[in-house]
Image (cartoon, rainbow, N blue to C red):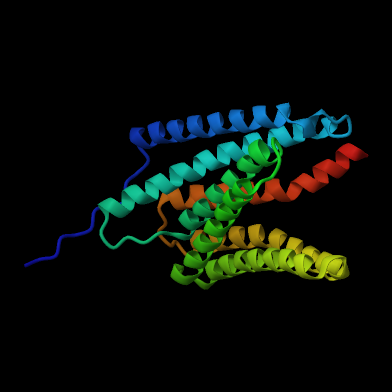
Length: 243
């Protein structure tokens, strides 16, 4: 009895275009809800905050678009997984999962945390999204084969661990730990800037080594690149506005 050949990976078609349109429409709706609640909150009524509103609105809009793209990539991966026996998620799909959960947290914080007092439920939902991103990062580190991509996910995991450690240290030691926390925070920031560079290096090696990747992998990787760079650029935009 002969084993059937695996089905070819699907090319970009009209159904993908429709799926992308639907994902972006839902993401845009989430942005409108988050944006409206944020603008109406007491926090944004302060005169000192108003110069930054356009920057926050622009970042949240870009984030909503990236959440939609990530959801589209995840949907493509689920579809391929159901059609092709033995197919495994590629690094770009894991990056899309991470971008999706962290982007949702960003929109959630904009629309809910800034729009109301922080209670246990609000904090718990935000933490759940962070823990989910952490779990996706661990899964990617374990299941990704190439060392260049393992470096990417290993450093991503490091940033999660550092951020959590800083929070715990401040809760336990209070102001006595501020100096150490600031030093580690700068180290964490340097690692966060290094990760997009490593993603670009890994993508370049994949291209020149002619390693076959599905197109949705590239969309997921580029989506994460834009998401991380936009997030890292925010403090510089704020400082530029102050000047």
